[in-house]
Length: 168
Image 1 (cartoon, rainbow, N blue to C red):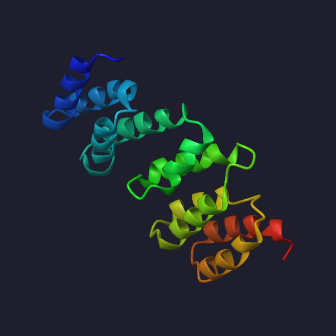
Image 2: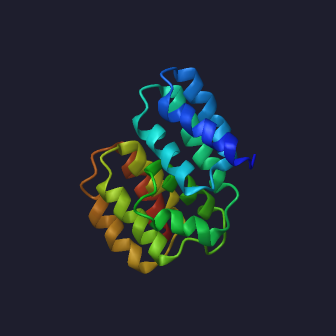
């Protein structure tokens, strides 16, 4: 899909249709245009604000499909970009985990920061699980300090796994 006219029609559908099914199908079709910043913006808006869960899911999938086509350097930028949604950051982190030496100190610091500031225990647990295997000594103290007061058992378990790389 590269037709600019089709892209315009789909953006109109996601932005103006009152029908959730129309918005869901348009969000799905926009995955072919997800490298366009305007499309990314609309998909993020749908993912965060649409009242229909199916539309949110399609928008999230369309954004995550884009990540599947990216090189590690671009995925790192996704993690570091303040405008990127948490869902996209998590998907990028997952891809970076599979690439050797792709989790740079800057990416790891951004992951730790997000894990400490997120109010969602599921997000914190997913982030901490992505840190498993990272043995950068500069990560040990932030992990201990940020996760010591953690109330969620799943997050504590993931933190214990991540900290095992330090042989503490």
